Image (cartoon, rainbow, N blue to C red; front, top):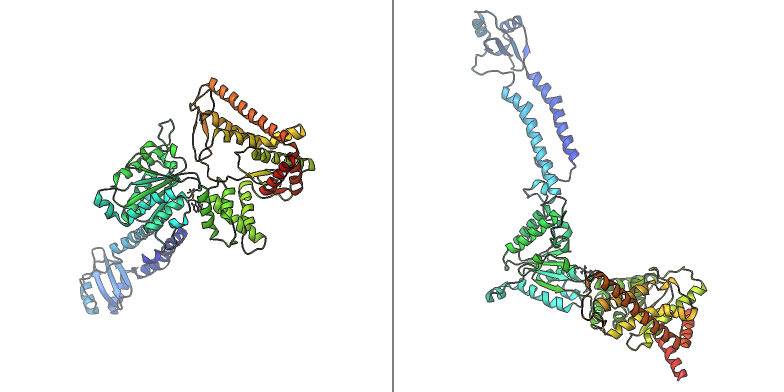
Length: 610
Ligand code: ADP
């Protein structure tokens, strides 16, 4: 049995083996047995052989006489005759009269060889094949058919190069929160003594790429405990009940390995609200129910901590987020200025980079970027350095890679006509000038009219000078005016409009609508929520919660608001027509100008004008 244990051999191998054994059995064993078996002779031969003393053993049966030759090699048989003298003759011939029964072949032997042995062989092969299939389906110990319903969670056991909190930059609040968990895993006695129990589940919520998975791994790395990782979608199977059994299995394994951390990524895949709609997903609901039951089923102090990540916390079933299950929620937000700077530094350590890189400036340029995007920016900078055949990345690489990540690569061979180039120049200067002339707008960092692969023909990069947590009504209005500045410049200069403003229009409208429906910034509606945000971390879709008449009223107000800001932008540009012309010409020639160049021209003009 042992020789066929190697599980790597293909099934065909075993089928071949069975056929070969049967073939050999038929080809060799059966003729041998047949050769050994009885030769039928006539009575005369038996008499002659007796007289010639050529027989060894004889047995006289009721209906036949079976005998062997002297050497006991061949067995003969013959019929019984009425031969009263037979005993005397046999005695004279010296043949043995033993009590042994000479048989052609024991019937037991025949049954064994013909039936039991092949059956045994097939049973053994069947067992081996079954084991192989079960191993493939995820573990041999399972009593479940073919191992379905095994959790197949990835287990990360402690390793020296595991992720630590130090690798996760920024996110100080989240780290502080999770440090307590690490401390608990190190020293549960301290907590038990006072009667405190750890939260069973911790929900990490935040936009994609902010380091939720990293944080979970860092907790395991710091606590030096096994880390089971599974994505919510992996639980959902084709057959109802399979997901539930996977949950059961995961928790069984986790309890065996406690203390440990179980991480369920994208938990919204199984944890969505059970709304009882027709055609609901039975499998998902069963899986969720099982998860709820399992979380109730173990005591708070068993040492199993469940971390889960999602970017759609509002869609989770309330039963999942109640105390006793995922009772702690750790927000993992987009990094602020300091966080961005730290993340850039953490990732810059992995590449060779010039010493004089101004991380603060890059962090300010990359406002709104997530940790994953910042990691990508650093990597793009390194790639750019390699492309330019340099051995290290520079500040310029970093700045260019921000643009690459935001707007795509430069389009090398996009051909703009001179007229188009001029329009784009005016458009971009229009944005920048309106922004600069409104005191509250962030300073312009860079303006470029080199087309990008994202489809942008040019853009104005603005830099926030610090963290902004609140925006005043005036600041939002100014932002809307800045968005309309590009189109306003086209109107002021060329008297016609182009398609280049489509993205500006979208953004201006979104801001204006939010002011009215969500921020309570219009007199008529006061502080009434007319819109609710559905998923704040994924694009922030909204749905209206008001009557049709109010909707129409909102639309009118949005148009009014945007129009007034558009007019304001046009006025600013008309008043600064000379600067607009000069700056646009400068940009047209240079294609890319920095914020400093822009400001120096603007201020220089001011001085001359005054
Ligand atoms: P999430 O699970 O929130 O979608 P991940 O944890 O998978 O995001 O992060 C993706 C990548 O982004 C990480 O591998 C890491 O390189 C980078 N990253 C994200 N946040 C941070 C951070 N705070 N510090 C360092 N790197 C980060």
